[in-house]
Length: 94
Image (cartoon, rainbow, N blue to C red; front, side, top):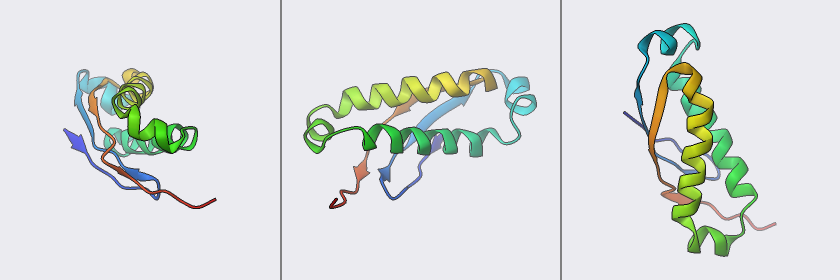
């Protein structure tokens, strides 16, 4: 199930499936909202620590890093993240 969302930093579709329905209901109030929040926070953290040339040259590596981090957070809720892909990001002048 995809959760595409946009933040001020970018757009990140997150594809996941519920592997343990009991945990997804008992261990978190709203697994879709919680997964979205974890993904947004992780996206901000990863993009905030990356240089523009790294974003352009190593996007697949960043996608894998995001997937691993999000999956680690959602695993206790019975959620398995299968795909994460940075689609777009906004560059701000600092």
